[in-house]
Image (tube, rainbow, N blue to C red; front, top):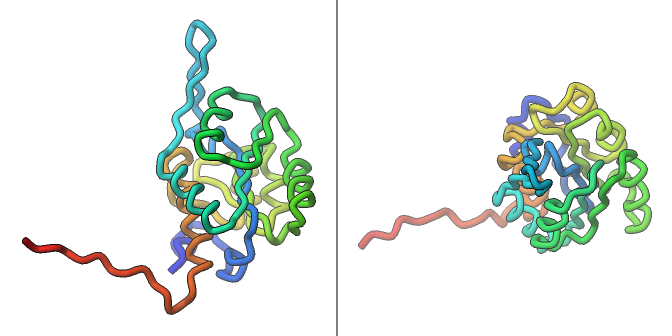
Length: 186
């Protein structure tokens, strides 16, 4: 069962999830809770979810291309992207819809083959353009209004992983369910 069935807002059909070849997203407010910590010496820190990171690795293994499109350049974003081997990282781009459309064209994907997740006004055009537009539940009203799917989990706390699970579930053959866990008794 797709988690989208439980989303407060979801108009996404299983075939749409299955058609996605590129999952692109904003960073601050999607992969993080939107908080940036800057120390007195100018060093920036962000908190990223390990759950999200593992989900993104699973997508790469499944052949789904991952991209990050951020309106601001950040050393912390670069470090995390390198750790996860994110192949496409665009920073300092305010026109995210154009950045997404350009990347999709370069990769040979139509809008229908793209999912985009964002949380703010500058993300709304990309959310609308993508085949599946996604927002976390505490996103700004413009992003929420543009979204086809609103996650149950908050940004920086597994929201991206929730989307990864939807994308991965759509690729499993109907009769190929994961094995049930067993209790081992000693």
